Image (cartoon, rainbow, N blue to C red):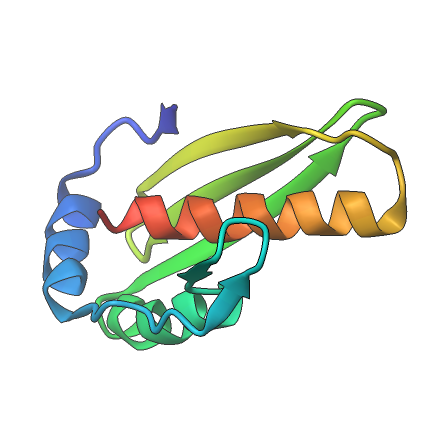
Amino acid sequence: MKMSETITELATALSKAQGQIEDATKDGINPAFRSKYADLAAVRAVIREPLAVNDLSVVQLPRFSEKEVEVETMLLHKSGEFIAETLRMPVGQLTAQAVGSALTYCRRYSLSRSEE
């Protein structure tokens, strides 16, 4: 994990935002596991406003190689404070669909864990 030298203001703002974030609607269906999940759009919909009104923003930076994809998710505060973590995932085949799917999963999962 990377972070700014201090995160006092970010931590205060994140605490307030977490109190305002509702659970994302699980509208996505995973037929392989016969389960429902909250897709990326649903996760973004529930965090967008609480983050914004508390002077927080999220930046997600995707990268990939021949064998894996990764997304660095940065939570930023207007003060300049930040925390960042990278999630890596293997990719079986290097196709546009496989890379896109893995990147979307990384983005969704990283956003979901950031407010737990």
